[in-house]
Structure formats: C-alpha cells, structure tokens
Image 1 (cartoon, helix red, strand yellow):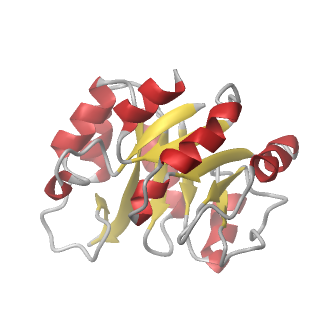
Image 2 (cartoon, one colour):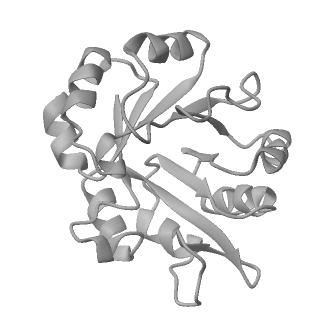
Length: 204
C-alpha cells in the first residue's frame, strides 16, 4: 500500500495546499493529493475559487524537485486535460493521475491518454468510464460502505484503487485502517490521508 497526504501534509488547516505542507510531505517521502484549477491561463493549486495568490502547479512541481512521488490531481475545472498533460511532461513527472473531473470532461482525459481515475462512493454506485479508467477513487462520505472484497474485486480488474481515509470526512480512521490492514501488501492500493505519518506507522 502507498500512502499519500491530502492537500499536503499539513499540521494546521491553514497550511492546506500551501508550500510548507508540500515540503513536509515530499521531504518525508509521501506523495500528495491536491486541487488544480485554471486562472487567467495558468494552472494553480486551489480547492476553492482562486483569488490570485495561489501556488502555481509549476511551483508545486518545483517543490517536488525531481522526486517522482505520486500526485493525485483533483480536477476542479473543465478543459484542463491537455494543459495538465503538457505541464507534467515539461517537468518529466510521470507518477500522477487525475480524478474528480466532470463526467463529460473525463472523456478528454481518457482520449489524451492521461492516467484517469473514476469515482465510487455510496452515492456514486456505478463508476463512469470504468472500462477505460486506470483506477478508482474509493470514497465514503457517511461511513465505510465497502468491504475488502469490493477493493479486491476492483484490483482483480486491473484497476488501481485509492481509498479516501475516514478523517477526511470528520470520522475516526481506526475502523477503516483496521479493515485495510489485511490489504497492506497490495501494491496497487493507495490511502489518501490527512495524517500520513500515523498511517505509515500503523501499516508498517
């Protein structure tokens, strides 16, 4: 199992998606999930509507400093597939995937041969474009609705699986982590968490 941080490895919520959180994550060897939007023709890191002072995607990749750690790009606006692909090729970063784009926009990512994850959750019970998608972003808003068999079935289809840790939705991660402990040897399984050091210690 791989472990990635959520919006960088932040210690205070104000650090989310900021350079200090990304430096901390990458320096400890954790990739990250982050949010990308476009603003005035540039790709910026922002979960919410950008105001103009956001870190650019260039800045994030410069912090990465050639370390090909996994990056999960949460697509927050339509029409960015080619720009994202070009930016990662410019920096020679190959260990990344895109997810959470609108379903019609997802087609552009697949046609551009960007590694693309579809979504499954208790409200998204059928993954869009699942045959073409490289992986599944497995989410649980209200509680762990999926079993380890659900994950194993997806892995057996040749899909990568990234599980959203429960604390991202305000719940204790203990139950989910105990469940996933039995799958910790799966190389195609990733956990996205706010507390990557704790997760690494739990799953070691």
